[in-house]
Image (cartoon, rainbow, N blue to C red; front, side, top):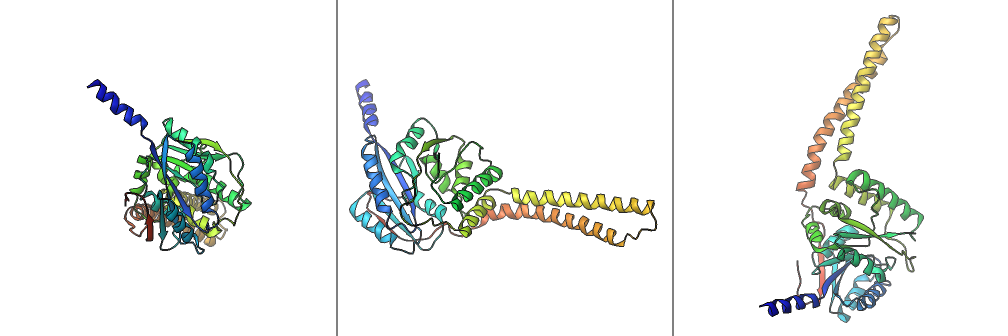
Length: 329
């Protein structure tokens, strides 16, 4: 019996862990092949892991999906997903999460700026017991616009979502399978991956990696896309904007009330002063504050209903190519 138990333990130790790489792709027909090749060469030096790659084309206007199709034909461990329209990076990640098989899921960019050859640092953090490991960059090689957007996103996640100040959030991270499964339970539209991670676990750390300069093309993020991303974050995962409206309503009502008292006192002190305009402004500010207060309370409930009941799809898959042995939906 003891020998049988030892044999089973030995078999378990010899089994490799499966790592799933999920890569959202947009305008990356010239870069995605290099990213996949770097993953292949890096994982060859990590024999304790096997791996699969899920490439999600977010309705790219170039030939990105044709490049993905070629990669799927060359490697049996690659799954290609083609979305019916552009749903955004976070929705593309969610689509990929529904196809992963691995015990560990790694997300990275399609442009080669996130170094796939340093994935071992993220995997080591997972092996040490953390649930999620984010890459931290000493120096980011993004444009000034993207760096500004990152700073705004950092502030928003801290204020709206309760992200710890010392935690750095990036698009390059590794997570345990249970975290990803919890994330896929979220069925509402406009997902925000950072919010889903933060509500799933607090065991999150950073590891230092190098951020590369972009060799081909430009960033797919525009001002409109960044604004949509931020709105997704604080409307889908926080009611603080509604609470802010409530606080502003209370403050306005208080100001109007105090101004009304001031107007009355001024009339008693100087009866000859005409107070019609002042009284009107006091009434407008006071009742305007009350209206904002009521709207804030109503909005609190509407926001919760919206978060819970909006059934628009996160993504729509037009086509998938999967050469793996099994497929999970």
